[in-house]
Length: 113
Image (cartoon, rainbow, N blue to C red):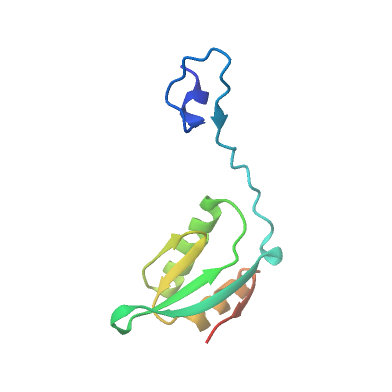
């Protein structure tokens, strides 16, 4: 079987012999060097008085984003996640996150309130 079949979008089957399937674009996004990344670290308040440090501005592959999130979670000793291109770290860890990002060569700064 062809691997193109798995990439077809919006159509399951067509009886038109001249029909051209729309295909998902390949995600071959290249992750720039660390020093070219401009990251911002926000502090969000969730329901119940919980705090969340959110890192935005990462450009690149999701694998690289998840690897950075894993590193930050390990160094901060807390849980977290990646969602919609952002890294979410539990608790108010902005100072430590900015310090770790600068140590890794990223341009990072605190943002928001």
